[in-house]
Length: 293
Length: 308
Image (cartoon, rainbow over all chains, first blue to last red; front, side, top):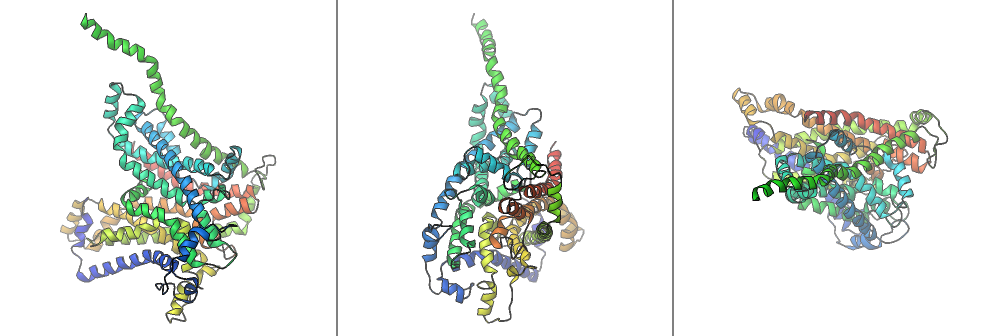
C-alpha cells in the first residue's frame, strides 16, 4: 500500500488540518445521527417522544418498546411482535446462502480451471444476471412458484434467493480462483486426482477469505431483501424486513415510534453485527461487486 | 521381467481409465450446467416471458390470448404516474450520483491525509451500507417527520421558526428520499475512492512535488484524473441502484404524498399487483431493464474485454 497521496498531506498547514478534522467529524456525526436517534428513542416511553425532543437522551429509560417489538407488537392481524418473522428470515437466509455459495464456488472453479469454448459467454451471462432489475422476473417467478407449489413458502423464497444470488457468488469465486496457480491444478490432474478431489484438496483449503466474503455478501443481501419477500411470502413466511415495514406503515392504531425504532434496530442487528465483526470482508465484497477484475 | 511390468502397468491403467476420463472431461460442464440452466430460465427466460407479457392484454393474470402490440407502452408513456416516476428517477439519480460522488471523493481525500483515527472513522462512514433500506427508511421517515422529528426537536430547543416538512410536501418529498439514500451509500463510494487513492503511484506525486506543484494542483491535475476508472465504477453502481430504488421509497413514503415519490420500480409493483394492469407493469419492467442494460452492458463488455 503506497502512501502516495499521504505525502501531499505533510505539506498542509495546521489550519487546513483542523478544518479537515472538523469536516471528517461532522460527517461522522451525520452518519451516526440516525442510529443514535433510533437507539435513544427506542428506550423512551411514547409520551416522551411526542412531547419531547427526538435528539435528547431518554429521561425515563425503558426496555418496554424492545419487548413489545420483539414479542407483542401488532403486525398485520396478529399481535406477535417481530419474533416469528425474525425466525422466518433466519430459516430463509441460512439455506439460501449455503446453496448459492456452494454452487458459486463450483462454478468459479469450473470457469477458471476447466475452461471450455464459450466459457466467457457463460460467465458474461451469469454476470449480467447480477444487475437485472428484479421487477423483470417478478411475474414469471410468481407463476413458477405457484406451479411448484412453493408460492408463499419459505422454501420458495430460498429457491428464489439462491438462484438470483448465483451471479454474484460465481463472480466472487471466479475472480478469486483466477489468481490461483493453474499449474497446481494441472500437476494434481497428472497425478490422477479427480475433478472433485482437486477442488476439495487443493482449492478449497485456500478459499477461506473468499468464502467469508461471499457468505457475508449473500447474508447481507438476502437478510435485507424486501422486494422478493413482499412479493412471494404469505402469512407464515413473511421475512423480517417486510414485517418491519408492516409494523411501521400500518395505518391503524397509535403510531408507537419507540416500538418502530426498536424493531428497526432488531432488523438491522444481524447484519450490523456481521459488519462489526468482519467489516474488512464486508468491504471487500462490496468492492468485488463493484469493480470487476 | 520387472522392467516390462513397469512399462505395461501405466499403459494398462491408461486404457482402463479411458471411460472415466471422458466422464472427468464432462464433469466440469455437468457441474456448471444446473446453475447455468437456472440462470437461463429464471433470468433470460423470464425476461422473454415478461417481454411477451408487455405486448399482451394481461390484467390480473398472464393472458397470452389477446395481443395488443405496443398499446401497453403507449398507455404507459401517456400515464401521468409513469411520467412522475420517470421525472423522480431523473431527479433522484442525478442528485444521488453527483452528491454521493462528491461526498465520497471529498471524504476519501480528507481521510487520506494521515488522519489520526482513520480506523475509527472509516467504519462509521460505511456501516449504513450494511443496513436494509427498510431500516434506513424507518429511521429517516420519523427523523424528518415534522410532528416528532427534526422540526419538532428544533421547536423544543426554542427555534420556533424552524420549518422542515419536505416529507409531507408533494414537490419536495423526493428530496428526502435523496437525503436518506445518500446517507446510506456515500460511505461506500468513499471506500471505493479511498482504495483508488491508495493505489496511486508514489513516484508521479514526488515528481510533481519536485516540480513545485501545489497540493491542490496535484489533486486537480494528477490524482483526480487518475481516478477515472473509480468514477466510472461508482457511476455504474450508483446508477443501477438508483434505477432499482424501491425499498427505501416504500418504507419512507410508499410513493406519497399522492404520487409525488413514485419511481419506476414502485410503478411496476403497484400497477402489476395493486391495479391489475399486468401488461403495463411488464412494459414498465422492460423499460427499467433497458435503462439498466444501457449502463451495465457497455461497462461489463469493456471490463471483460480488458482482461483478454
